[in-house]
Length: 304
Image (cartoon, rainbow, N blue to C red):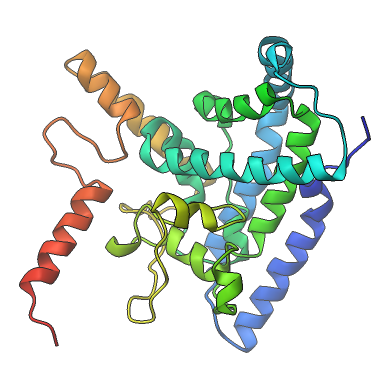
């Protein structure tokens, strides 16, 4: 097995340099927005996403679990070659699509992923706003199981996923418009990912791709950015806080509180496994209810 570097560790100094460069660009030229406290919170979330799992031994524990419980049952022994690394990259991106989609549709996973969406700004620092407690979102880790069972080595999966994450960094920006249509048709771009981070009703729960937007086109979750409906960023109920600890824990705390108030096993499962915003009486906003209200408003509003 070749010794492979960690792509995100190598790219981290470049990440910081590009965040600073984008801040200067926006300050003197325009084409985006920064808020000092928001950017600081994103950087602290990025720092914590590295430090906290390391202190908890999370990465080592997960790797050991896969090697002990899943890898022995792999179907093939896939060796190290450029074609196999490329195939693993594509397979990992498909896996990422389904993990990402589930993370917006299952509250347990959303409690972890919501950290990344909590900024009301969209710039390169937002890419670094990552969760701290992925160990709590254990079901999400199981999306890697099919790749391991097929026979891809864990270090190969980790390497290509690192490349995937590095790619996704640069698409968190408003300073880049749209690319030629043939690029926009295949690749995830800043335009496509702005839509994903938007809270506009037409954009909710769309564009889950990591690298290849073809997955969204194939599975019916693609929505194009529109000039007449510019993205508004954040979450349905914004935090109004730059406290990294609140950003990291707020949805976990909310979910536990809901479970504690549950009056039946059905409600427990609903609060944990149903889409974010689910409630027994339907009194809270979900993506579906927001889109339905928006559609009703549009149908009742005369066209200009």
